[in-house]
Image 1: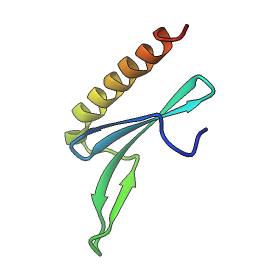
Image 2: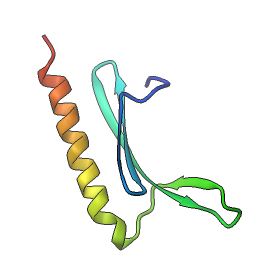
Image 3: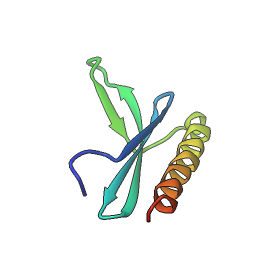
Image 4: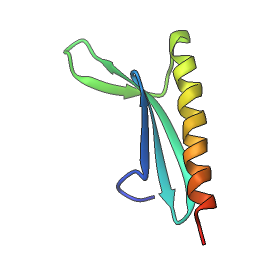
Length: 73
């Protein structure tokens, strides 16, 4: 994978990070939160209230990837 993501989609505290590995895409979905010290961290665990944003991020990531694949010569 590249050191930089190909694209990011953010909804609230939920982020889908899309990686391009020589034309094969992968997606990481994470939720940001503040720890007890006030520092921001990410987790791949989600609460019930996060699931709609997870689904929307996944759908938007799929659409973005599909557009990249259909734009190829």
